[in-house]
Length: 121
Length: 210
Image 1 (cartoon, each protein chain N blue to C red):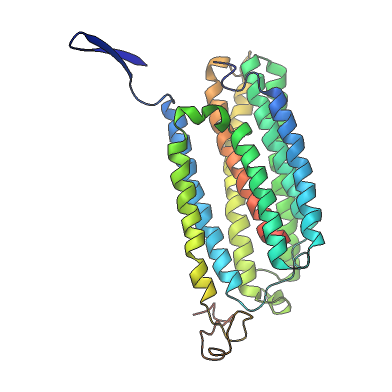
Image 2 (image 1 turned 90 degrees about the vertical axis):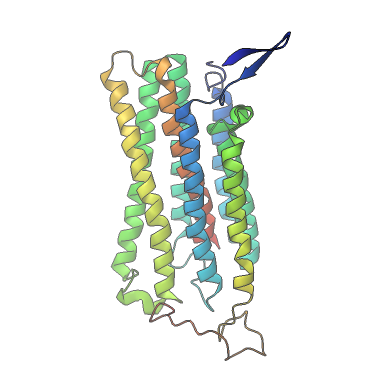
């Protein structure tokens, strides 16, 4: 059906395109205004997620194709990606590299040494 | 497609298969694998970066404005790709050719900006094993992450441009452009192109802003 497959979605495409450009500018200036890495990361990735949702729902037609069971392919992949990222946090949190700002006093100097010259091995 | 089955005196109708074409199903499955591919690369970057004591400050080695420019270019190419699908559905031959050509041009512009960035890095010695790495904190890991993430993304952009060029050539060579009945081919290439755009939407803040 033409309507179902993008024939009548010109206005939606146009508004989303304008919104994406505005959000890109916002991302740049908002991130530049923050000093800490954490604030930059949170603001940048939140806006990036909003932009990605606009692209996926409107440009990739997921808003209209959702009922066609497209979700069963995308949701598992997204869940696995989230698990992959979240599952790495204990690894990062428990890394005790000497000189790292994340090393605790009890393990300073006794933890893993990451040598830049040999690639960390 | 619905089929009828008789159970006793009752007639039941059931739908066989998915209400998606095989091609669209295959493309979404492929995109699911690509999500995992880039999730793995981004996870490696996260672990390496936050496991090191130092990292280049934002806007020092990588210029945020260039990343923002490239993001805008790729977003515009995503928009023109969507407009080209709309034009195919409308049967507007001139507009489909225009928007497909714009998509290809914007994709090439993205790669051009990337090539300029890379040439600048090479000129400063900021590449794996390069002489300039001592000047930047965690230099070897930084350049490895940067070139791996952006390099694989650029390869995906290149593959998308090959498909887009095929669509453009088809549209130009055929008298009535790409017919409405074949619009799904444009939609499938569009799905891939939008996905490449979504990946860059996340790479931009991760590499350039944080």
